[in-house]
Image 1: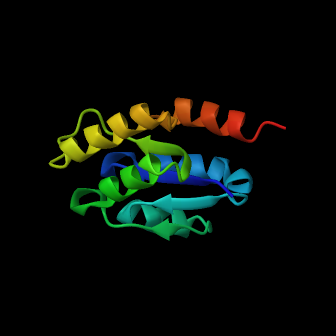
Image 2: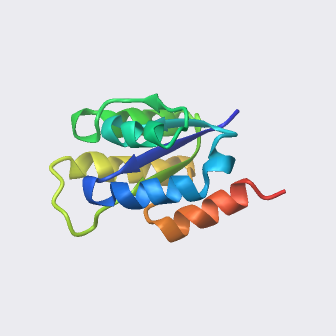
Length: 122
């Protein structure tokens, strides 16, 4: 079974929860992995999730490692483009790893929905 990674900056966590609730039935069919606090939000929707470290303390790097090892089908990373993030180098590294290893990454709900629709297409 393929895994989907879920990450959301603090300002985007409500959007992520709405997205997860909208796609709950589909996401119950796959393994999920998430960074720390995002993982708690994922779990609160009723989905099972493997939690990694919080993004700023290494969670983004852990997810990037999984992407480099091709253990992820995609990454849904709801980024806050207007906020300041002290771990921005980790965010950039994660995005670069996705490009190098051809792992789809969605950084907003519209793109995430397109990826999920394609992934679960019959």
